[in-house]
Image (cartoon, rainbow, N blue to C red):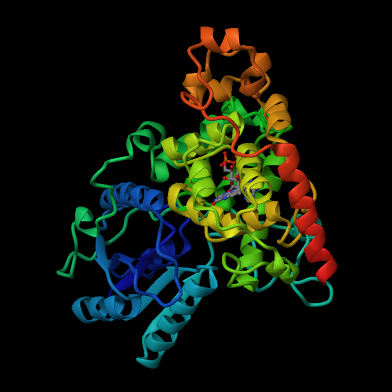
Length: 473
Ligand code: FAD
């Protein structure tokens, strides 16, 4: 009897344990993607992720087609869709790769129980993470809340498995099943079509992921440690959306790094470790996107200021490095890590807006929006997270800009209206002499905003409010 393989955020053929095991069984394979938007507690995908998913499914369909299998596309509650697929195909076995978001894991646990009750085989495999969060424990049996010992425990593990070879060919089941056309999943933006920047930038799918990894290892890795904080350079891997959709696995990345002698390899590996750490936190804290990891932050008097929130979302705060980041995000669905930290600090500490508002905006606009990395990183910046940056470390957006974009290239790329300013004023246009502004056709308050808050005063306010919650506990 056929084997059903469920695809979710593991949109690949290589290093796919569930698919390889199904092919090994020797029975026909039903490759099934279920767009489950009804599951209890699972979070609706953001718009940029939906765009990515559309193209990634197209790429997966192609690859599977080449290998001999057809990808069936369906939507509905997972259990119901799988039951229908079993009835139609006569499958006796359902395989999938494990998910670690507790809400998704609950859906899969329910599915497993139901299938086994019916006497069918249901089996889950690893693939998304180097180590199962359920198995990695501290000496006292708890879970890790601090990154360094967490990563040390992982690095000390003697062996990370090699990637699993793709099946040479797959005996694809070709019968009739409820099958939607890709467009019927309605994942793409229609009116307006805001995705042109995404189309220019990305190549979703497994082949695009591996092309990017190869390019990064060849040209980027050697400079990674030195240049990774400079947003004007293409110095990071930009693998994040590929990892978020499971088009490439950390096992594959590590296997490539093992072959590389580059000095950047160890730093890069430890960033992959941060992703593992975020998943470890999410696995043990289902509410990572909803609740402060440190409950004392529940007392923080956040400001509900829609006008300020909007100026941040649109890249109109008057602080060039913040605005450049927010516009990069809007344009290409991605933002450089250093700038993510700066814009997040600005929202939380300069504007005193709840980190959850920022997390939500990122969730909707990032192509790499990730259920673990996004909330864990926001909580890290807010100071409310596990092993977080201390709250009182407040980024100065001008100094950060001057340090990490000293020639203003990044700012000029995204904010052409102040591009004529010399380097000296590019991060502080309000200090530029009137003649220079005039020469550059810049009218502050009209062509580009004046700062929405004074950073010095905002910093003092943030510190007082932080003190108030500390005093309260
Ligand atoms: P590289 O530097 O090339 O790193 C390689 C990979 O390591 C990344 O693809 C990512 O999977 C992982 N990684 C790197 N840095 C981190 C980090 N600090 N935390 C966790 N994993 C990391 N990353 C996401 O994947 N999804 C998100 O939704 C997300 N939201 C963020 C929100 C905020 C406020 C901040 C400060 C960071 C966020 N990050 C998120 C982490 C980080 O910014 C991105 O992973 C990184 O910028 C992606 O670019 P890259 O692939 O070129 O990174």
